Image (cartoon, rainbow, N blue to C red):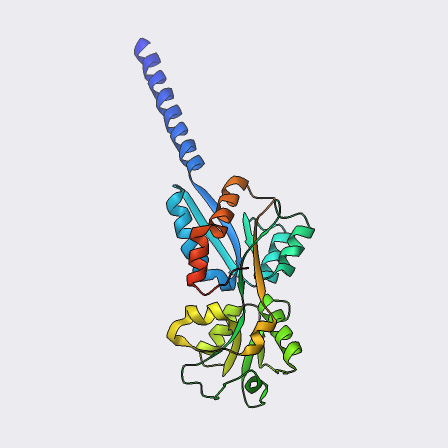
Length: 252
């Protein structure tokens, strides 16, 4: 009987210890979900690695896309901790619905640039060239920040572009150009920089008429608001700003 009682006690202690270990492991492992504009992909992935290195046991998960699509997902209850938009308009939608914790912070700005294949088969040299009927141009849809910027540039310059397609993110526009499906696309300066020798960038003076400001904020429904705010602080701090500057982003 004594042996049976002793064995049962050992078994109970062993089970309790195992249960305690599993619980501790799950508490230490965390995932921070960041919704960010497609044009931030390369920069935020680098910033995410820095964040993970500084926060043991934390994994940063990104969802990149058009800002209008991302804010719609957040409004519909998609689980996220941080939102970074390529314009203030879509961030305003989130703040209007009380989805952002505190006030968003402007952390970068961007302007448009023409991207063409390296051999520039259509001979594009200016914004006016994009209006030529024979030139296959791809732009962002109007509801996406890069699309709104494209429309703003057209309004300011008087140049009317008739694109062969309108995409839901700046990344999709760039892909159309790099795949040879388009003669030119209107993307951000930073996208041309990130594409390297896959495209040739053509600057145009009218781009200065429309500058997109990027805001970021921790979300009110985040399961770890302190951790979310720490990511925001990294992006807006010296380390994050250096990464963004190296990618071609300007100050807000």
